[in-house]
Image (cartoon, rainbow, N blue to C red; front, side, top):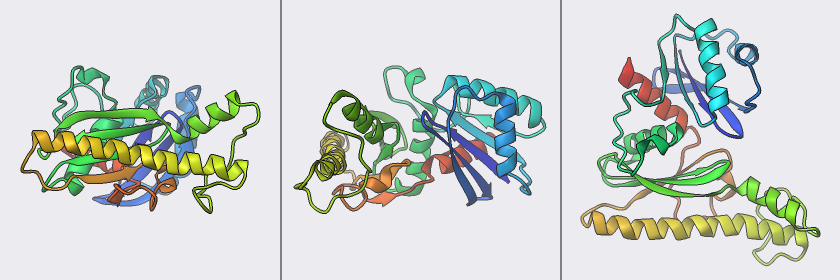
Length: 258
């Protein structure tokens, strides 16, 4: 069984693959203060009864990645391990100004999106997490760049913190776009506003792709990330929802290295 670990700024997602099939997944909070031993205790409780024979890891949190390295050295040193970082074979050309700036999660998402959806054209991955990332994948599976915006939850938190008469509300779809009270108005502006933001960016990205690839097929737009369900059915441009895209990408990278 392959253990995949995706460490994000807010949450860490773990998955267990039996071959190509994801059979278990868990979402836990990311705490950069956790030590290697604390991580091991947490993961061991989740993995009880599961025979792990390999690991694949990506992280956007340097402090957590450092402790995961220590954990692997102490408790998993006998297992083949892939940590997505410079020097690891991903098969994803990074066509950007500074490839070292690109987060490991964006690279594995690119590989997974192209493998699953990119046989006939480009892909756009919309990752709804701490930030909202739009990653653009060429028809050949190259990472072309993208757009980054503040995430849904941190935007709501910031608004509640800075506006005296506004508060944090439950992130659910309101009954109508025209809110009849403050809570509904905040929900409308957040949910429909972020869906509109994504649609606007996707449409502009597609126009640029059509200039570079005039004979391309339609771009596949894939939503992922913990907050993606908030805009599904509202966004007019999202074609697919793949909540485990990053874990799938980690499995694919691991297979390229072992």
